[in-house]
Image (cartoon, rainbow, N blue to C red; front, side, top):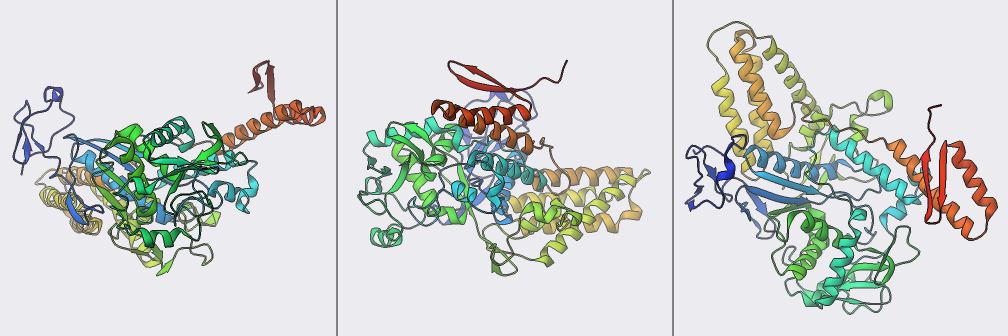
Length: 534
């Protein structure tokens, strides 16, 4: 078995485009061997309907994108099961010495209520959430987006998910999206109506190659009930840009005020940070069609190159055998499960929840039960106790567990390399814990260090031993206040333009009470917090 490249070793800049021989790459230092990009990790590819080698565009570098959430509410544990799949790929790639760029987005505009079924129609999910009972606490949709983005990041950290290389937000990449739509129009892949800009599915013959939805008649039938634009040439065509000067979140474009379609956002952000061809694209199984199918059509119509070589989709999660929904009272979030019981939470160790979510294979439907969660809590307790046992081991003598633990680590690594077989990986970890507990009275200092080193390596792969890194918690309340101030300042400007000076004065008084100074100038108004000095 060849040794994997150690990225901590200096001098790797010497090997550039090295010659290939068989399954290996020859490098300047003959003691360093990098396994071929297609032989390190095997994953099921939705595009080919089979488990195959993950082949990289550039040897030694993994570029992958995973769809993030639409931040109109708290993400539920089904969402996080999908995010966990991407996190495990990220960890595995790093462990194998790959240079990994992992991008996952935040959708904070453009995801409409009918988007999961067909073309963009209905209300924007962000705007609809603002009108809900939970949305009453927010003064505007921007406040709502900022708050739930902060909540996402706190839950992300709680579950010990590594921070991605890049986490782009749709609202921060509007120029690139508009430019992409312009190019699709120029290439003849899109057309304009009085209501928006649409991608012409007929112009892309490969539409449906990921999902298998290639029959035009059945696709027409699927979308017929939700399509509302009579000017569309084909019911299958999907929105790239929606013209709507009344929308709560809007930008000016060559086609007037409006907002982007959901699908164009991910195509643009993925290629912006990863290039025209991705090694891997991941997400939940519900995104296969239409979202990922539409991403492919847009990106490949723009570049003429394959958009993603490998597609990984995580299957749905149920709770106690039923579909998770708020109406059934089984809509579970990370914050609810991990909050202390005093705060009306379940009081579950976040790493135990992480273990529970990875106890089922990502490619199989997963039934989340109290029994599964209870078992994971027990396993986490055994990890904590194992650390105490290993740290207290003293004396000299033969290391009685090091080789056996190393063999178990190899099992964990092999299981993950073969289509992320997390049940097999966890079984090997549990076997190692049993070994440590069973040998507790016979361990010396060397054995203790071997055990601690083993747990550290297990943590690098699975993230279940301790928090890998600490991300500063966003100040959600400060963000909300800043958004509120911005909104009031806009309202004050509008009041002054309409000569409603009474309302403008009321807003100034309100801002003054919040210790905010307003600076008016010919180019507009800005604000700052009053100094507490003097």
